[in-house]
Image (tube, rainbow, N blue to C red; front, side, top):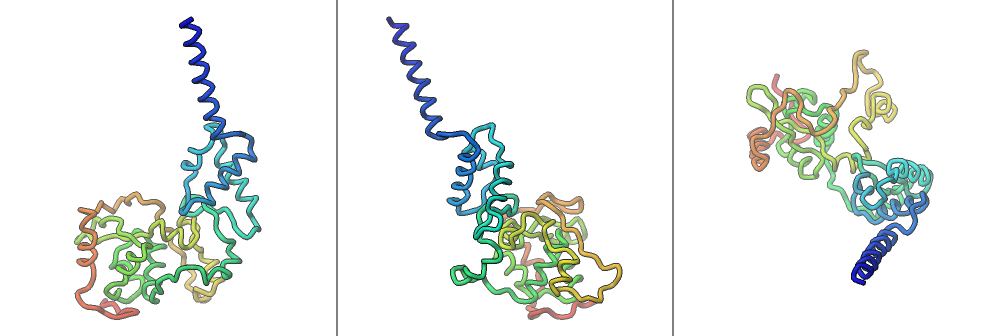
Length: 253
């Protein structure tokens, strides 16, 4: 009798486990899994990694294949499934974004010097302040890098293994998200910049767009910051003593 009772209780336990599993995934067909991913992306306040999505799906689910299918399904619609900074999200179609400008929070307006500095950091990273000034041909006004770091688009990467150990700068994941880039390789190339009228048509024959370093791993000529808590102090040491104004003063050669 005791054995029968134990077997019955064990059977009930297994039944409850199966019932719980079915509650989570009532159907495992592809259409249902697409709906699950769609719901997760819609509800997420920030882009989601494919690994995080996989936690809500059966182990055998082809997460990448499902995301690719969902992306194709939303192509040409009012909202698109896109990948930014290696993560997935649902965003308004690019050609309809003008309709939502009134709803968007106002972004702090950057000066021309800050935009030029941001472009240099994006394409030349990892880059030091001295290298930025050398590329621009003018000294960076005090606070330019501060502003870009405050917005969250530029960060300190480390220090360069050169005399003085200057701080190196690079872009952030927030930079990729804001500009709708999945990775730095998606930055506009030479032909795209020319087509947009952002480059002079009469460029030197040997002119080329630099290849930014991908990832947060330090380069061979970089070393870690001494103490992450001292980043602000390091930035202040790397800036000039006097405010040189905006958009910048000619750099002393």
